[in-house]
Image (spheres, rainbow, N blue to C red):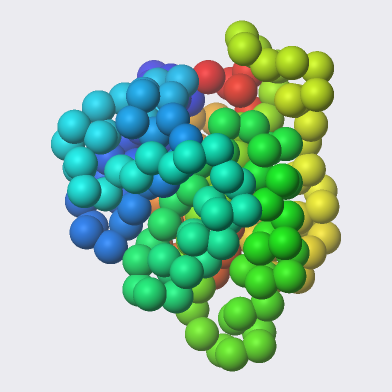
Length: 169
C-alpha cells in the first residue's frame, strides 16, 4: 500500500507530464513534506517557487488559469492561504458564473499539527469553502482517494480547494 504523501507525489508527477500544469508555492523546490519530492528536478520549468506573498500566490493562480495554464498552488498551511483571501472570495469563485469560462486551478492547502507549526498555524477553513459558491472541496482521507481526487482536480474545469490533513502523511 502506498503512503498518503507518495500518492499525492505520484498524482503531481503524472499531472506535470502535461505542460499546461504548473506546481507553485513557497517550498515546492524543497521537497515539501515528501509531497513534491524530485518534481523540481524532473519538471524545472513547471515547478515555480514563490516569495512569501499569499495575495500574489492566490491571484497569480487565477491569472495563470485565465491564461490557459492549470496551476496547483501549494500552501504549507491553510492559515497562510487565508492571508490572500481577496482572490479566494471575491475573484476566483465568480469567474465561471460571471463569464461562463473555465477556471481550472487547485489550491492545495495543508491542515494539522506537526513539526514547525505554531499554535496559530493549524486552523481548518474547509467548511468555509464548502459553503462558498464557486469552489469544489476535496478532502481525501485515504492514499488512493488522495491520488484520484488530485488528478480529477487538476484536470477539471473549475477551482478546487484540495485539503490535505498533515496527520495522514
